[in-house]
Length: 138
Image (tube, rainbow, N blue to C red):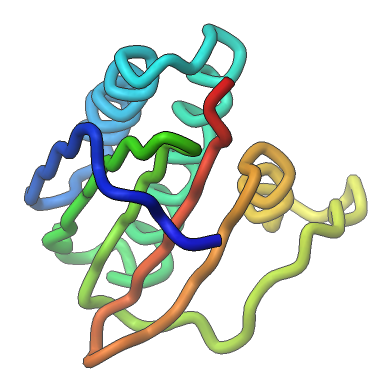
């Protein structure tokens, strides 16, 4: 899917701390609402953003340092897109959308992210991890 020219764009660069996750995910949801997504879709974006940010905090940085992250929200004629960029340790392999066994204590975030976005892609370019998540606009 190619993005059409932007209608609106928002950017944020911040150190990621656990306490900031709810604030940042609410910021994303507010931009999604302004872009025209309904309440259930905004809620889903809020949850997937929180899951992704928690993954960056826990796994990419090891939870020891507050990693610097960049967030970008873009609204096109077709979709609302969220891009999260960090400099941490890249994923070894891409997780699947398969729900883990109930006895596993971890691993539920990626299935939520993959199932609650219309498009999700992860790539590493020039030492930067980029997670792009899209929701189709009505």
